[in-house]
Image 1 (cartoon, rainbow over the protein chains, first blue to last red):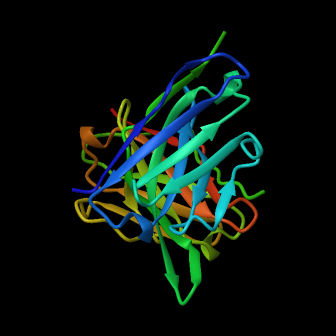
Image 2: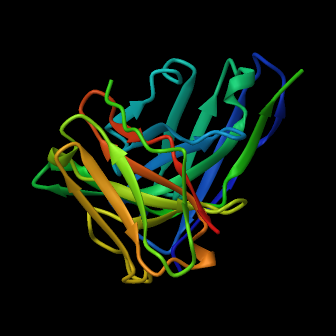
Length: 128
Length: 107
């Protein structure tokens, strides 16, 4: 059974740090891009960061670049998000998702990609 | 950066057809995905590559994309379809782009 389970959320003060984890099972973890997406209370979905199966390709949304770091561990089949310098507007439910992106002969066709498996989310609250 | 625009809300009567639009510059040149999000639940992929349905998604949910507008169509709308729907595309300037979401209300 394909499954993603997030953990690590909680209450943190502004300026603090938090590390989110996403445990993957039921599929070949290294074959897939993985992505973090968040939803603030009353707001829409917002992508945070994504990483290739090898970990060599990484993208960040502008507002997260320099504060957040995405990583993955194939041996543990886990995805991580290290969040530093947290702000109140980082408060959200954070989802990890599997991103299907077709890659052929080293060329990846991101434009056809889609997120087909999502975790249940973990809640981050930044407040003093 | 690239932007996708959705209407904030759409209402439909049970059994009728709901259409949710997503607009963007030359959107027809890109591939669109649609996600369904119910309160307290994780998003679910309902359409990928403009019009493809993942397994388990009913045939009454369909998608199209042309020109500057993509459309998610739900035929024979049921109460269980009431949710927020998000369109999403990939772009070279802003890798992952989501629309603002549309709340579908089944009256």
